Length: 255
Figure 1 (tube, rainbow, N blue to C red):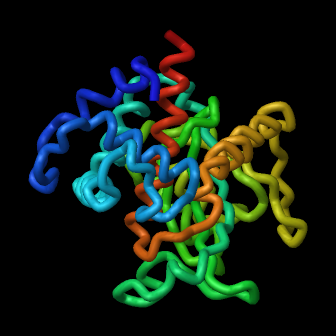
Figure 2 (cartoon, helix red, strand yellow):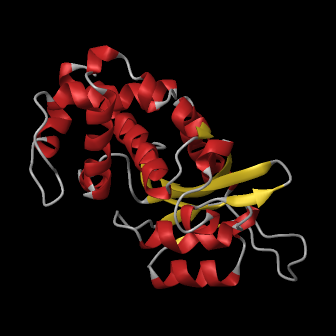
């Protein structure tokens, strides 16, 4: 990472928490190693020796993940006010899971894995702002409907939207009513089987492509494009890590 990116992350990374564990000698190098794993998608044991022992970097990754560091960073970036939080988008994408991701304690349903014809899959539910920067993320099994991921990402910490854009997969009365309770408007095209077809502003709805672009950027990280992690919290941690990198680059480019 660049010096500017490290300047954004350093105040959070150097803090000690209840589950932070022993301080690594070089926080920046450890974090770079985690970023390298996320980008390349290699197994932890194949971590380049430049970053130190793979087991040490892995343990620190787990400590930071279980302590909620990544969620704290994402929340801090969203609270900065950048990205125009009034207009937001929500969508989901299905990720193929490698066979080595199965076998964690609790079974596939507890780890955000679902069965389909092609094997195990995971669905990522994502809420982004007007710049296509992540606000909240949730995981379900790949066979789950978009409805199931709506409440987790909307109830997560982050700025409330005034207008929420989504595709027809989110056309449900409870979603529209929920947005009214939150003081916003759900701009969602109606399905053909609805008796009353509700109009949408085509110019505003065209901006929904920002969430698709965000998914594209996230999947450039190979650790996300295919799920290798057995536990849902580790895989979700990598999603947060790549999301944080998108935010830091936005801050660096804007400065």
